[in-house]
Length: 278
Image (cartoon, rainbow, N blue to C red; front, side, top):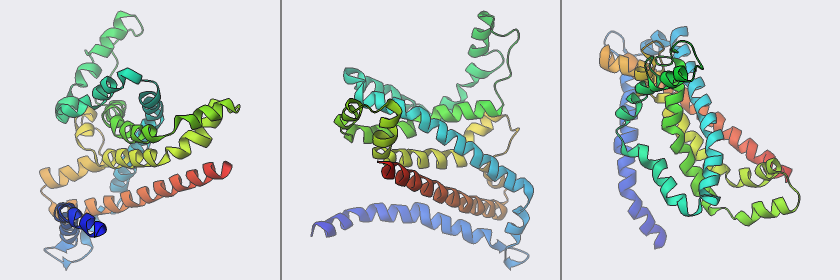
């Protein structure tokens, strides 16, 4: 009876997912195969199977991978500190961590212009301390895209890790130190395997969001480089070419699914190696 009740309560979520996720994806795939001249065909996929489109996909994969690994590297000490070292300041620090979600994302991204532009805060500080002789061109660059994306998506990595750290028995870490293990040995053999599920969830969240991001590359990149999100938005909003846009979206989704599968296998391999080492 309890299982039937759980299934009944999950029906609204299932309906919501089908209506607003799977049906739009199915409609998008159907549009990508339709052409006014040829009917049902692969002509749109043939048109986008060139080096320029694959460069855009590869660039987005590279950006998403670098951002995900950077967020993972910085999120571990932050989540560890929040769970075991913050003590009374934990609630306040968690409030500051989630504070960016309360601000409009467009305003959140655009505010970085006041920091990175040629006459911005960062260049002004560097000039005042005579670290540089002339302002740096930081905005409208790949560096600006990566920095703002890292800052925007770091909480998506910290929060899943923090939840796992909260459930972790800290006496295991203390026992490892008492038995003579170094910090790196404790991390690789105790902390990392026990928190790998949170790291995997955070990695997938950051990777998916980074791969399809279009607002940050558009505002911070100055239109110099195309990514998957920016190219899809151009096909749908500027060119009004729904069929080609649908085909490129479907192709990007397939590539993203393959990348996520590789990441999943990578986490499984790391978990197997770390647990086997014990």
